Image 1 (cartoon, one colour):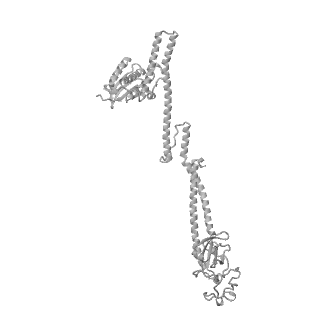
Image 2 (cartoon, rainbow, N blue to C red):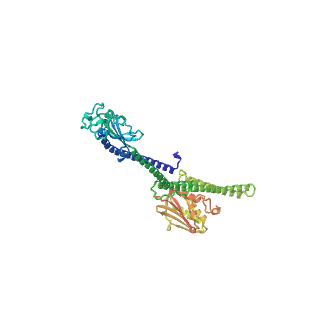
Length: 529
């Protein structure tokens, strides 16, 4: 059942349950302690009451009438009761409340065994009483209950000091109260003190006042606890909702991300040292990585689609040329010579495209064909590039310098000469194709910071920031029309980067619109010795 509740409801239920247990335990301890203390006070007041009752002479006890005892004058004592017992435990006389306690049989041995310790008994009406049993004052033990002790001459009890009963069994000065036959008190229902009188006294007080006090405190605890639980439940619910607010924001953010909004982030609380703060920070880092991963995946898929489209376009053009001229010759629309020449041209273009793709694929694989590394000097390649520019574009001014100007210098490297010549050839072709005729070109070669550097710099129209960022991508061309007059398949610079990377170097480009472009090939410098 509790598993179906929300986290806030479960926390509140657990908190309220713990409060209830705590209040019950505290209230029980307090009530028990109070009852113990009040019982001790009752016992402290009951003892002198019992001693006073036991000190009353037997002849005076016979004259006492059964009327309520003034126990209410004592603290926590509402009603009192006194019983005088014979040696065999029978009750000789009762004083006080009519609905007194139901006493057990208390003979002289039982009274002596209790040793004056208070005990609790039930009353005839179900009410609890606190009682104490004491021997009669001035006795050292139980007196014979055989009725053999007799009154002396003149109605006196031997050893009583000469107090005698008057005519008719009355005590002089007693107001005429006399004992009937056998020593009974008239109107006492035949209860006789006997010749020997009582041997023990039981004094008892009602515990109704004590229980009333404890019950009032119990009701007060219940009412106070109920109010306190209500207030704490209300305040605790508000506090728990406020404390779980960051988790609700996490839930809302997760729902928004599930709906496709990957830019959403969890608001981080002020205290990052808390559990919620650390959770929010970790989630935001994870969400940033997920967003970057998804963006990279989307970009990769877009590039793959573009790559497939570019490959299809580049392959389709020569294939359609071959097919078209073949059909044209078959239908007699052209001579065999021109048709075969065009078919041969398109076949060569198709073969070069396939070879470039295979080269890129082999360079991408770590276990692809290895490079034939030998000591060589980039200055030789730079000089050959100068001759290529002169042959292909004789109208271009060519400057042959160091990497940053000055005289050209040696740039020893450990490389595959055939692959590095392909790098230089592609850079020369890129400069001739994408700059107007007569545009000055600078070829720089030398060392810089422990690296051998080859520079191809032109003063053409330059590249935009977007073009500069993608210039080394495969099949990328600034001319979206992909016309043959403005470039090839878009693999030349991609091959340059792959070959240079395979040599442990890097290729960089710096450009700005209207300020030309500078391509730098940087390879680790080899020891010339």
